[in-house]
Length: 490
Image (cartoon, rainbow, N blue to C red; front, side, top):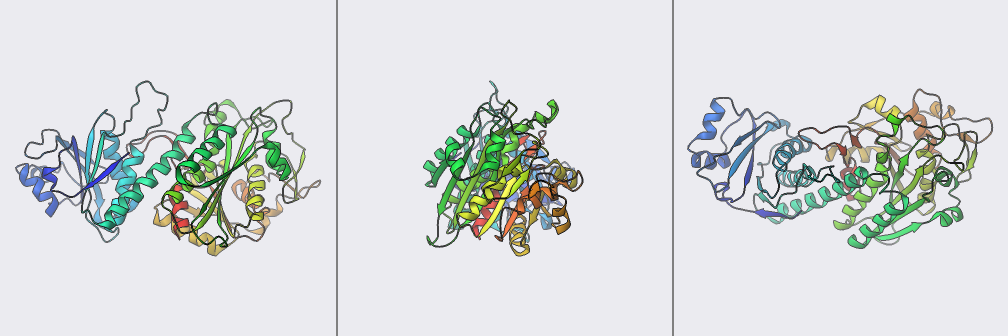
């Protein structure tokens, strides 16, 4: 989507829809006063009649906007100005954009809100742009008549300073990266499987200047990634590991590694899921999709840092060759693993990919995975769980998430949770008891990162939305793409 930054009076902006935000309690600002005067005091009367309250994401449409160049005026509430955050602004703008994007071939102009005590002008411009880009892409990828349409022309009305231009450009890149992640998550497993995901990574690399390497099943065997290969062996689709590299700093600087779980479909293996448990399992590669989206933005923004993205790609299927309960696997780092649940497969994939990233010289690690239902039980569907072996590195990530208004909550990693993974026949087993399952999964992963500072993000809840909301499409959400980009930005 091309977004133009224009600097002109709101009354003169020629577009199908002009979107203007009003905070609570509503008042006529200098910007609004011009519109109000051109409309014969209509906005003032609506405020006096309490039809406009400024409540967050409240929307009021003036269809017959005679007196201004725009065909229609949409006034959206921003909530209290001293409580305006990026997520609240995103919610307001996205609600307005989603309402308008239900129609085809529509042009839109959005007036940037003035800077507040909580958000500066650049943050407002970036967030507004990202909200527009993301909210106009739906999940109806296969509908003959989609319910969501990109705008024919999109304008951001504000000052045309270099700072604002840069913020709009960044917001566009970030929105497109989030949409890349969302689209991959929303496409079915018959279309997105290890080979096609790897091919998509190669295409993104070509478009953005990233270096790309794809390890096939033979190379993975040579790399001794037996834990990952065991998960894949029940499928007709061979495993892949896609590796994208961005070199924005000195070649000798050790890279940040972003690692994503890419189980393109999870049947549960021989520990078979019930039918209802499989319906959304096309989304079990959301961690890998998050890494791909983040890497595309990091490259397009040309961030001055070295970052490598690793995506472990497998299908977990049932066949006569499926890995079995009681099998003992030898991971890349030599650790032996007793398999007691083939539906606890994501950690077996990540184990080898984490070890590979460490062996290749990463000095900091972040992995993202739709890893456990237990994390959803603990934190709900809107909050990401964070687990770490290094508090300082975790603090850095949590601060990055805070800057992006993405919700992350750190979970405990006490040693006694690791004791629950002891095995009588191998170095460890792949599952612990029922309780504390998100933590024991993280303690399992910890065995494969050596002493490298590492944060594990369990995105099982927020990665996939069950239904539409006025401000958000159902399906893939692209959660943590923005945080990973912010983290790489330093």
